[in-house]
Image (cartoon, rainbow, N blue to C red; front, side, top):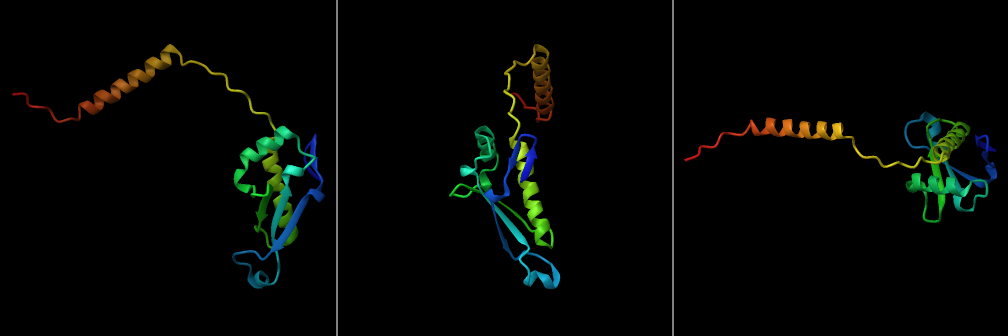
Length: 140
């Protein structure tokens, strides 16, 4: 089980792992061992994720969703397969924790009179500063 928080956990059977050779330096093992891990998760058919969390998760991670609706994440940070699997699961856990809380609704407010005055004073001072840089016109 991938435990996200007290009320959300996802069984590992929902995930599909594939392995390939890692890019980058790695010594003699780089050409022999498949240490790069790709985690794929069919998020649309997952029964363990609430709908509102799923919708927020999909909005936040649009670039990691394939055309078939699968979510994927990769890891080739470590030189052994097991640590890369754990890294993929921790990345997914962090993403789900970001999508878990319900966002607060923004309450529209008006700027105060003093903040409007400060803004206008600042604009006026900037305008005067820039107008003082102009070359004087010679009126005939």
